[in-house]
Image (tube, rainbow, N blue to C red):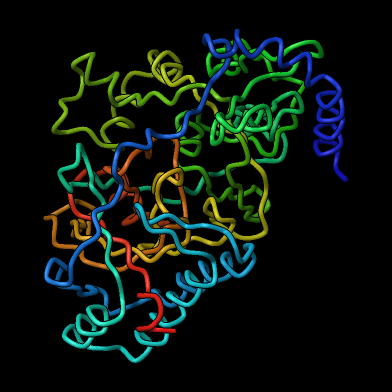
Length: 416
């Protein structure tokens, strides 16, 4: 067991006998002493179950490329789940074996490379379709994108590599409040255990400017640029090219429990970037041109991400490898994990010099394999674009409306 794991185990052992003490502080915590994550209101509908006449005209723009790989990743997750695990599609509930059957049957069919007409007939006859109610119940979903960044780094701190990528702090804890009462199901708090009580974990400014973790938390790797590190945290995973030529995969492991606040909104409020021009590339351009403002702007986002090394990657919240253009991040509190999804939105066409020439229709099947701090509610979805220049361009500029549907195999007698 490495030192980080040993420290975390010791912290947990200190926490267990102190649960009664923690109970005494719950009232204070609910008044704002630590981040509280609440389940979404149950009265808000997530899905509208469609009749066959309302089904979209299913087509896969990329002729099923990489779709089989992504389905296999969801299957690897589902086959490790308890058979009685529940997956909610609005008012309808299905268990793990049915989720598996749905993906297996769909995989067997698309491996035949069916035509658009054959695809539609097969879905009409064999699948139920549930449409996301979207933003304010209007059926519109805002699609954004994310990608896997590549950074240069070093295992040793130097004048060139000065910014730490931290592992998980040993004093960071997350408390499942459902352990105290069933009425708190789906709720948790994240904070710092001091030996006597739980307090909010350090926010970004305290970590980066106040250096509250220096010498206390293991550093996985050191990188050159604080802006690159910031966007690595936003993306949640990435690759680090070390000076010796070795490549390591790092992945989200924990967060400080503080609210995520988009620095793009801050720059809009400051009237330095118009809303219509907002993109990751525009943010980078402004920060590069105004280095004296960088730290204050980054500190606006109080959330902070801690990483771990993985043998492969990138991995989504299911612990399976994400597939470029086939994995989508959704609100895992309300959408079924590992499910088959159909999206209708747009994607960029990019010129040889990396500029977007136009946005074209994107209709494709994807899998619900990830989540994100800013992905909340039935009106948000985040497409994983992979790595490389196109992925960075697509992820950094995508902010477009569309529609999102979940598919599930019709139960017995149709398909059992």
